[in-house]
Each structure stands twice: as C-alpha cells, then as structure tokens.
Length: 330
Ligand code: FES
Ligand code: ZN
Ligand code: ZN
Image (cartoon, rainbow, N blue to C red; front, side, top):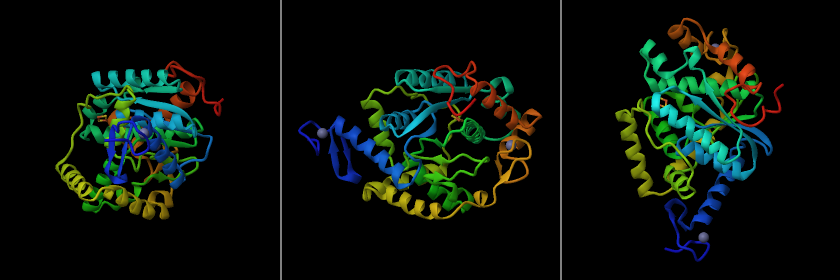
C-alpha cells in the first residue's frame, strides 16, 4: 500500500478521509488537521498563551506535540499529581521527561500536603474516584489558567470519547451535561477560563498511531480507579459499529453537535455566579470543589489552591521544575 502523496510505503489508513499515508505525510496531515480545528472553532488567536492539561497519556502528549509543532501558541504544560500511588509516580515522570525532551515549560501541581489527593478524598466521602478526580483537575486547571493570566486551557479529549459522552448524555436526558460538551467553552472573565479541545475531531487510533510512530513517551498503565460502566460500553460499541458502516460518522455527529452548542450558552454561562468561598465560577452559592472539600476536609480549599498558584507556582516555586515564570505574572 503506497502513500497517497508520495512513493513511500503507507503506515496508516484513514478510512474517513479515504487516504493511505506514509509516516511523514501522516504527521503533516495531523498538523494541518489541528490547525484547521483551531481555526474552524476559533479556539484561540495566533500568539496566545495556552495551558495544556497533560496527564501523560497518549492523547495529551500527542496534543502537546502537535500544538508545539504548530507554533500557534506559547504553551505551559500542567500536570496535576493525583497521588494515586505508582500510577501517579509514572505519570509525573513521563510528563517531566516529555517536557524536558521537547524544551517545554512545565508545572507539576502537587497539593497532597493540603489533603488534595484522590485516595484521601475518596476515603473521606462516598463519591466515585473518577468523579472526584475530574472535579479536582477541572478546578485546579481552571484556577491556574485564570490566575496565571493564560488565554485558554487545552485538554486532549478526542472524537471517540466526545461522541460517546454526547450520546450517553442524551440517553440519560442530561441536557446540562450535553450542552457543556463542546470544542470551545467560552471564558467568563474572572470566573472561568476559556476551555478548548483541539483534538475534538481526532480519532483515537490516529492519536495512538502518531504517538507510537514518533516515539513519544506516554503512560500506558491504566489508572487503578478506571471504571467503565455498562452504558458507556454499550454506546461505544454502537458508535464504533456506525463508524465502520459509514466512515466519518462520528465527525459528522460532533460537527452537528458543535453547531448547536456554540450558538447557545450553557445555563451556567448565561448567569455566571461567583463562589462565595473562592470567587470562581459556581452554579450555586459555593462551587462544587469548595463544597466537596468542605465536606471531606473540613474547610473549602478553593482559596488555598488559588493562593498556592499565585504564590508558589507563579513565583517559580519548588514545583515549577523548569522554565521561567509566565511573563504575565509578577
Ligand atoms: Fe483520575 Fe483515574 S486518573 S481517577
Ligand atoms: Zn507520503
Ligand atoms: Zn469555590
């Protein structure tokens, strides 16, 4: 099988684009696809400062690699250490290695001394580890992007996951969740950072193939808390079959969904409120992070996190392991 653009052997087949590509043309194709997504969804302007949330998995390292190759933005890699034993140790090391190898500024956020560690928080409440983990990461990354003066927060959600979340939210009639799923969630000044998903139209197999072809370091062990429920499994199977029948099905679904969500604002964004404890976005009097930590640790931790960011992180504290402090701060 020959590459569509040259005489080299193709290493990947993209059924939805009817293309077989060699290693070099595949990389070029993905880079162009990333640039087109940034433009199509008006994610950020050229020269913006973007925080990239990097867990160390294949998705987030691929996103960072492509963003950095594109030269579209000034990046800060941020990893939230969740203190999940060996899994977190490997993740921290991988993110560190990846960032150093690529000459990127990076920041490892470790708030375990304040009781913000997944095993500890889970032991004190009855919530599922994944939901606590998601909430903690969302809070820290949002606060950090705002408090360090960055323009946007990029995460590595890809098409296969986004399509599943859309269909699953619809089946559960969870419209709040459904409308939050979007390639761009606009900023609310002072309360919420702009959130972008540059891999919104990328298939997982493309990401994995790229990460392996280019020898990117990534964490392949699974988080010990990972749990996939029956509904998610079922929806994923259904969508995979639809994609097989009709290549490109998931991207069409995602584009139609984005057209709707981008033309409307979620209820939360329509009437933004500030958390009484930490001052960031909240749907009630107190944001979910402050409410949750108040229950689990006896006090709302939002302000503690924000002080840490403004103090230690911005001032180039011990956890900023490389690079200079962001120029907007100070
Ligand atoms: Fe968050 Fe597993 S990585 S619960
Ligand atoms: Zn080629
Ligand atoms: Zn709060």
